[in-house]
Picture 1: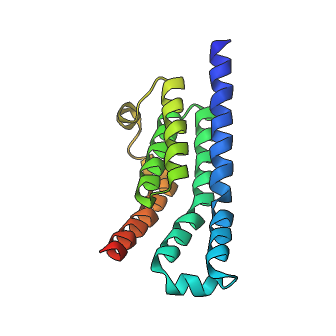
Picture 2: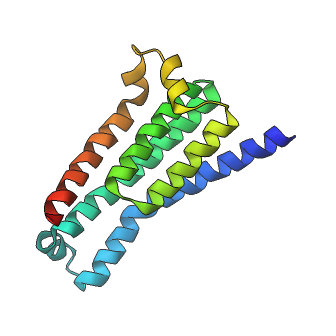
Length: 158
């Protein structure tokens, strides 16, 4: 009974994080509309920081879809790949400096590791390296885009 409660809580966390990440572009557009007074394109060209924030917000629905795929991998029994996927997405959220993404994915990753009694290092050791890119390739792409956002943010701050 306890395991069923933990699994349903984990499913609820997955759903909440996916919903929040899916809504991020709309929240960013709303925020830009408030600051620009209706001229969204003007603020994106005038403020590089807003453009980087907009780019990272536009990646979030794809991240939510990858979280959904990780959830399916957990249901299929491919736990090690799901944990590696979530770990790569968490690293990407750290690079994009998305507070909602960091907290949400950190919680989901932690709860997943606890519920399935595994850790990212153990998942790395048990994963077949020949299947790794096929299983977590989407998360690698998000990491590349997040690295671009981090580089742009650091260049803007300098």
